[in-house]
Image (tube, rainbow, N blue to C red; front, side, top):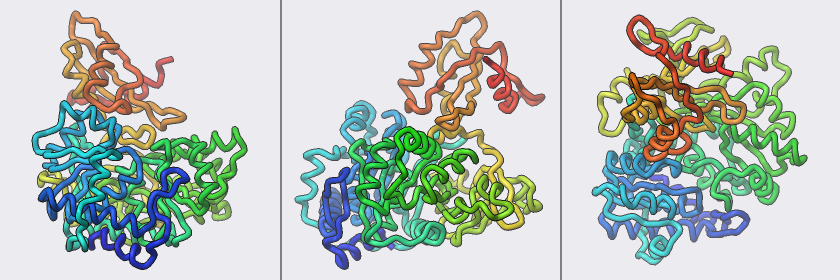
Length: 508
């Protein structure tokens, strides 16, 4: 069940197949890809890292990212992927909580991390860089470590309502189930196919590597290291049969670029959108402008990319009497998952009624790292309580209606208000604060902080912004600050965020 076995198998069967690309330049075929992973595993073994250990990957998208992940698995350890956009203090907290022994970092992240590296990290390796390249010369580990289905291979940190991230333990079996669900909903891949890493490899885009490793397909890391719509279209036309993961905001930018420059999306095979709400008008226009290339996946860190799917045939269908409703849904349950909508007691609600979405299956996480209380609250009788609200129709299509955790999704990234609120409340001049999301045409939502000053004090908004800059990732910073006399509250003293959103929306 070790993913490195999948790489080794492909390297034996299709050694000369092109594997890793930096832009249009070939970096390694599958034989070299596997050799590098085995050497990295050997270097990790020399450092005493093996089964059960955690290794952080705080890197921007690059071919070394894939070599690193497979090297970690080849050694039997678990990868701890960390969003490269996080503040150094946030990344350090994750490393310390996970008990990371070694960290692979991009140069920029490594420089920022220097002053914050926790004591548990015995070594930091910069990739690409000389100390990373030196790993290629280590005596390779001949075979991948033996892992069982319940062994953790991916420790993904997702923020919670407490304001601190929680480590989601994903096992080898969870990943295998995710692959099966993808193959059923999106379709199989062949060695002629390619995957383009335009979204962060620390998230869904990264775990979508497996299907292409198994088939011997190509892996393309853009020279930009991220998402640039012009670059995406150029690479797709160059390689053809390209699949990619995209947040809805990325899809919107692709539409606008195509309309402005006449691009048709030639070479794009699958654009799999997820990570936030897709507006009905946007996906209709996406199909009109770029053709039948789009499919949808709904998942969570706790059930990675494996809850529901809306395949391309349903996204492009305009003949079914309920095609509009289906297009605004997140699809139907994947073959590896059971999906229900329940009330607060766990009883299924009637068709069409709104309740909390729960899911059960082999893709559901093992639990939260060192957090049995949160695990027991989230997984009950084998069912994962997602915190998302939705409704099922008579044909099993799931429509999202709200997020019970007040999470903000901006540009495909999850932002939890409590985390931002705690930073702002550390300022001596802030008496109260409530952070909400405000709809935005490009980003889906932007962060807005509603603040109440301490009596007799005048807030310096620039100082608040600087406080956020020093402690949290830039994408989490409020785009606007609204100073209020008081926050709307119910009889229990709880801030009524629905009312607060209406008040903010009414501000010219």
